[in-house]
Image (tube, rainbow, N blue to C red):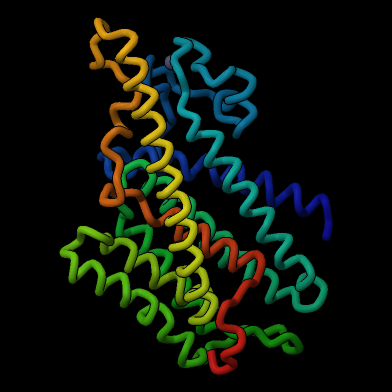
Length: 295
Ligand SMILES: [Zn+2]
């Protein structure tokens, strides 16, 4: 592993993350991706110095240089996440560079595209509780096509071939349970967006690892949901104590207002959990079904 290349991938990730923010803040708002970014408050066109990933946020204290209004923490968070994921992709495939360079380039390019799409899906689902079809279908399409590409180590050539049947159908098989849950609950338990996301998970990781990723996703989701509900109960209890002491104060500005009706039925975005499962399996190579050789 080369520290220079690692830094290159990290910085490249920061820059792509900055671009992903542009997509995230403009998608479905009628604005195009082109055109200079402006401050949301004072409309000042941002200069290159305002757009240096992460650093500009830290140096200017998370505020606009002109109007001092608050800049969303989503900017540095998305940039850092993308930077770290890109560096992880390099670390995963670095050993290939000296064995089969073509395979290194192919795997890296596909993975960087996939990581970018996953960042878009995580953040969009967290903010809007929906996964745009464009993002999930792009993920499914890229992974579906990549599945057919083979690279010969000796000939350094690229050709197309049929993948294993279990891999070919992995997307459909893993999407089906989500589709079924969506169908029987008429969309109350599970959104159709999760089924579309599962297509890409299957085609990216294959059936066994994809299945493992989804099971991890459910576990992580269950733990986080229980913690959120506990936190909400504790906050609710604390605010009851508070209002007993300050009974004259109106509760209309309660900071807990948006978490106070959180229950198991609330729409907790599920895509971030599924993607967390995917990333664990992808970077650490876990496979719960490795005993079943046929998968
Ligand atoms: Zn401003």
